[in-house]
Amino acid sequence: MKLQCTDLVKTYGYLNAVDHVDLTLEQGKIYGLIGRNGAGKTTLLSLLTAQNPATSGEVELDGQRVWENRSALDHLCFSRELNISPETGLGNIKVKEYLRIASVYYPHWDAGMAQRLVALFRLPVKKKLQKLSKGMLSMVTIVVALASKAEFTFLDEPVAGLDVVARDQFYKLLLEEYSATGRTFVISTHIIEEAADVLEEVIILREGKLLMVENVQDLLDSARYVSGRAEEVDAAVTGLEIHHAESMGRSKGVAVLLRQGQAIDESRDVTVQPMSLQKVFVALCGEEEKA
Amino acid sequence: MKEQLTESKSIYLQISDMIETDILRGILLEEEQVPSTNELARQYTINPATAAKGINLLVEEGILYKKRGIGMFVAAGAREAINQKRRKAFGETHLAPLLREAESLGVTREELIAMIQDK
Image 1 (spheres, helix red, strand yellow):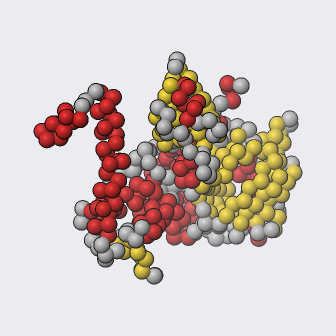
Image 2 (cartoon, chains in turn purple, red; image 1 turned 45 degrees about the vertical axis):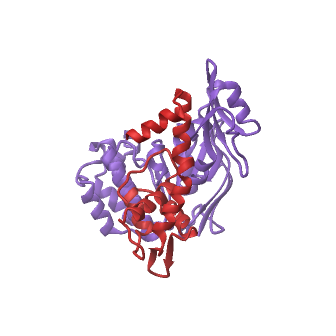
Image 3 (cartoon, chains in turn cyan, green; image 1 turned 120 degrees about the vertical axis):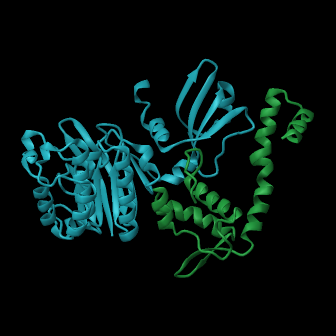
């Protein structure tokens, strides 16, 4: 099974929130979706799961249009961040009612798993959503995502507001479920470093556009931070793809993405260091202000 | 397999290094089964594909081998092979940085040898 979008656009007023995105999601992978605030992550996830109509472009599951197509939608789950502001009306719903709605909506719902997770997270099922903390709301979205058993499951900021122990617990649960079932997960997050090792592929969005889809390990293998005296650094990285150059006095540091067969000239007097996914992301998406 | 992962090196290389170290130390014995990719994924909270990449590196080097339907095992002679490999790499991984630092501090070869003998 694969989920594919072609030339996907969503326009709000003058803004292309999602700007001509082509993306194929393969079955049996954990994808991370990263981008700065307002990059279009949530909009893209809602378009892929047909919770929001696209301005133009197609979303297809194995060649079948997803929009208003129950048989395709049965394989998709988008567990949104819960918005409990008064206009949504969600705040007055109790946790157990919200889970019951999910159990009706998702045809492959695993009630036993939902129960186990509710107990594990110690969720107060009789409380209204508006009485829950940010972290507890995230836990509710995690329960829905995992128990939906949908082939393609999308989680929007599942770790927002969770403490560090709960975040680790979530990633372990995710890996357990993934190992047992081979479901596809797409997770958006701002806490990139913690997710990096769990992801197989990373999808980077910048201002609505798809910047890259890459195997995380391959991307990290290709990324290097080169620093030293400015002239030496420039000489060492001549002809390479450079991002986010920073200078301080005589010294300089640059992020480099090496393509197949390329290498840094290490005969120069420079320090070459590996980069974390978070640093690569900042190098790629953090340089707008400078222009 | 109780080491902690760091950010300074690819995760899959750290996985293969840890397995090698455990074989060297006799924590994993020859002809013994090594943890599965799913077990490694769970223990280190890493993607199973990354764990598999680390395991596969060792399979390619003949340090591990696959028993169909059962899992990965430590090959006979693996301990000696790892020892040889690490000895060969010793100059590059350990001596080169030592000599570089010594040079930038102005420590002479004689002084360096004396330091080693004093240890």
